Image (cartoon, rainbow, N blue to C red; front, side, top):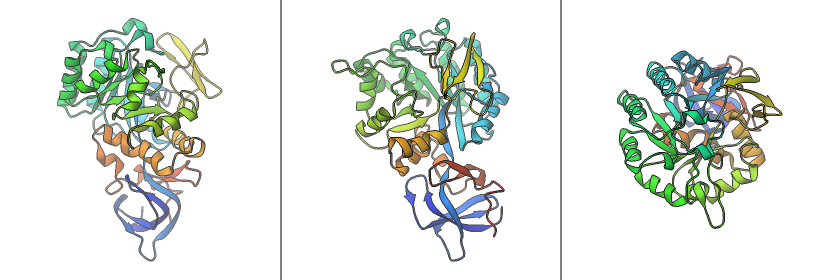
Length: 374
């Protein structure tokens, strides 16, 4: 792309949505942002760092559980990049120990590959009662084998999120994972609010897809949902109008004790950017009226992109655009300790999105159709 200044209608710099601010491209990267000089090329829409998704099971017809390789991770990342997600945690759900071993090897081999910023280990140390679509025969308490995998990944500098149910781990194990630098996330749990609070005190620092696969909020039994809402711990949420009602997405954002405690995840399966069906374990799953379901019609993962989620947050839920962008960029980057993912300066043009006035993705600054004339 040419070396030039652009002047978008709005610019999200990773912290705030700003007007009257331009950015200078040089050598295909954002070199600086600041007041747009005279002669800057007008760029309709909003410019923002690309989206960061911490829960991506698959994409482009590839499921990580079935293809736990660096190439599989790269294919999943490439599929989501087409829709504006430029950084992902490929996510392995509950499976046999040897599948986790292979996924860990893949994460080590995939370091530095475009869009792959770590790994999310979602299970198998979860509650059978709140297993969702996870295969119960693989569910087990946390053991030294998994901790050793996390230890190896962290020693190599690979960011790790691991979802566990408090009833499947000990406080000492949570503390050990936290000390290793892993992000311990509470999910797929049927436990009490008190147990959740104890697990947070031990080192858990996140919640996995709020409301889904966790004990609900009741007026005398707040459960995992109530403990999460009242905590100062970030929580991911799926915003597709299916997994969580739009009204409750908005309520959860408003209910937290301080800002910046909610972030978007897709929980996407291989149907995003791929065929409308695939196999998981021994089940056939398919997209039906926008819902990803098994043969019994039960939900089994999500068929949604971060881009669709951001647009839904603004256009349907009624969240302020700046808040929605923080939920798709800033907060997930912060959760994983990767602040550069929420910055514009230094980013390749392909990692910077232009959004339409309706908050859908128009393209990136690297797209040939998007590149303005100098």
